[in-house]
Length: 312
Ligand SMILES: [Zn+2]
Figure 1 (cartoon, rainbow, N blue to C red):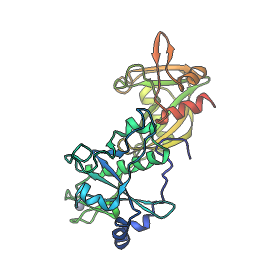
Figure 2: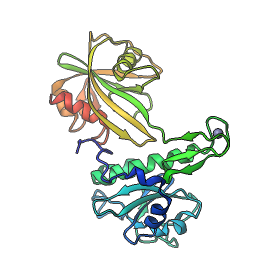
Figure 3: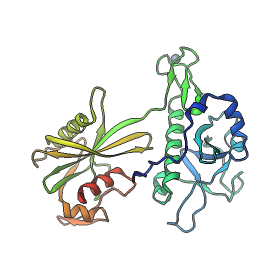
Figure 4: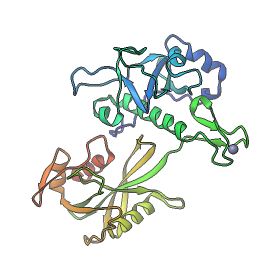
């Protein structure tokens, strides 16, 4: 258990089985095989026991995949649990009313937005839903070959697409993002983008570019966004982030001075806070300069970074 949300995938991915057609056919009709259903990227979860109560995946029988999602749907093999029970995921067509009063799944649960229910899920359910959502989303966006433009076909139990025209193979993408907390002595810098909710400040972030190390991306992003020079940086944690499919790589970066020069395209405002203020901020909003400021919830790696520095 790493302590970050969406980490700690609980199954053996059994990737060698992904191309074993005989195994997969038998596994899908195995009475112990379980199915995670999604629709529009939203997982099907059991009804809550109270509005803030714990949430869990409403597992269905894997044999029901064709009737729920159609015979053409890509059934993703998630892996095997400790008892060797196969687990699958499938995305149902958006126009099919499954959870409504007249639907096949009436009364069994609902499709819910992962961002909303994330904090109420167990770590293992969050990791499974995150992985399934990211792959399902990739299939929806990558139906055509990036080499020749032909329509591609799913393969390897949903973990690949192949092009029947040119033979190219395409794999689910993961986009690395450096997310970092600039620090100078006993203060750290938080920033806010214009699209953030009022009062929210977070760590800085940007995509790692081709030809860059993580530390180089961290230093470049800090220089571009807030005009500060990084002296040293260290990796603190990383996190699969399924919105849609980033790998967030968290760093704490020591900077040379505190004189910020903003790139207004990226960052609307920054704020230096003390370690003591950071300790309060990880538990809830604080008053600072006459305003109420707050930072992302524990589900986000920005929280992990702030906590690591505040308590370090
Ligand atoms: Zn092609």
